[in-house]
Length: 436
Ligand SMILES: Cc1cc2nc3c(=O)[nH]c(=O)nc-3n(C[C@H](O)[C@H](O)[C@H](O)COP(=O)(O)O)c2cc1C
Image 1 (cartoon, rainbow, N blue to C red):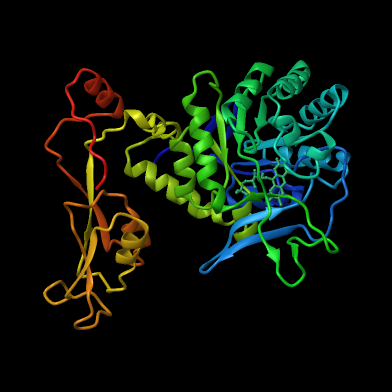
Image 2: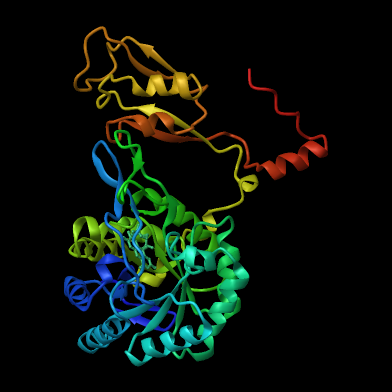
């Protein structure tokens, strides 16, 4: 069986699954419950000068069939006393010596950074995570994403922490930035041992059309919040890969953002993460989701013949390339399984109105026995010669495995856009004819 333990920048953890800094990592009680359920690490709710929170604090993007597809909060850092937080970290670490306990920190001055890093170390924390990502409340006070959005300030504050740190420093990055690698490089320049990403995205999830006030409503007003949950996973994966692929970053990555299953976690690992962190999915479903995550990741690694989590880390990174290097002659077409097709014709409508007009409607007779179809009611048929392989029909099709994308042999060698430009310049290629 594959070994699930990880060594993240010197922080050892029995598995790569960590509770992210947030409401599920607020108290010793929760940390004990998380570790008992199977989590390998806990990143404590950010500790700093205690704040006062508002009521209410959360809102969500719900769509049919998926509640909390996206989640928004205007909560600040810990509202508990600094003493209580560090005392509880010490208690938790004592009871769970082999699990990772990381103190998330956010303060202002150099003296405060020195004090808080030292106190985290004295409490027995395995590492500190510097929260340069919170995009609401704290940034107005010059902290959180206000730091993470300015590489020079990021570098300066990391270097303050570095002056006293004897335990690993993780810098948690904000996604509210154009180039995440510039922030990651600044963290490295300041002396960080690792990075974690992403924190939340600045957002407004909805407006109540009766009150005309966005949610969450705080006495007739709202505020820009931090967005997270499944909806942000693609953004997080993109940024994790960008950091992992950049040799000038070169730091271990803890991947965060929309992780709720072992598959999500495996994708983050494949794109370069060494550990992963989860917040919203725990708020939604509780600590026990880690049981399926552990079992699923274990089975996946075993099925791939991988003996440890590190065998997966970064495996997909080199497959993300610059567009101009992709093979222009690679060809895929859509194929419909008529024993599954229900004749809803969503693929036809999507292709006709929203894509490339290559799915016709034809008589159903003689084309399989898909359920729910009506005699004489037309069903879709792909004109493969015209299909550009865009995937849209297979994405809108409501039936699992009904439309699959088939790879066809183009009968010509690979050619990238760069190759094409070179051949064109040498007069070896005709110009691409305009689309009819
Ligand atoms: C209600 C709430 C409070 C949060 N508080 C913190 C915090 O104190 N410190 C921090 O670094 N991140 C905080 N986060 C961000 C999470 O740690 C995480 O980066 C983000 O939610 C993305 O992960 P997810 O999609 O699994 O939730 C908070 C998130 C939520 C939803």
